[in-house]
Image (cartoon, rainbow, N blue to C red; front, side):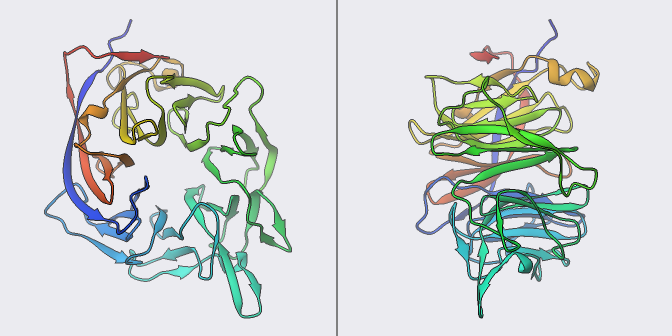
Length: 365
């Protein structure tokens, strides 16, 4: 059997901020361009030349005091999603773009607004990503794509009335991996689901429409928290992780803990290194898990999806009082970043992995 990398996880706090009167488990999102790193936070869009360096300032550069749900960059433009709540609308644009590193923003969702006279309503969204030069976004439970910065929009999931997307009754998460759009959620109520379909070459419509994975994967009421594509497809649900296009539950804590796994990162320097995090619903504490494998170059990359994965619960490495892991990300230089939450206080830090000879209880799936 190939040796596995088991590591001690060390977290080094760098900077903190507070959120007034909101201690519910939140999310922080990360993006970077060629000059800056950005954080989408509940108190605005933060910017720093290097978040991992305490000597480099981090400031709220835009939307001070407002909730920024997500941030993404294609190198040329920076995109943000604004708005409160899982469901709802806003009288102001919620999807905006900046071409000057966050100094100024302009809306690109104007054609998606529902207007009655002078009053318009915009759908609140929670995830935006760049795929093949296109902007793909979740807005109000719909998934839409624009190839031309909002001049034209194409609906990939949800429903539309008179050319405007409807507010859906259920939230949805998504990611684009190559020609596949993966989707997941919990709809109808207490019916978790995940699946996907194949997009056309231009990414604007379906070659093979999305289907839910049934009946071999019964998620019950375990809502899908995120979907990501790296060396494989990974998705977080309540209490477990899903892996691969076979949609196999490969890390299930069962009765041990019941974390809402909402964050995931796979290290580009060694794709065997993965971290997953969120919060444990049982005792309202932060949750962090680590997996490792053979060192870089030990195996050809095309066999990565077929290797077993060993996970360690390393939540003990979190700062005392952590109630939620709000972000896991990788900076442009390969630094692993984390944002932890303790009630109203968020702390951004770095993750250091050191070799460890001590034996830990591990779960193999």
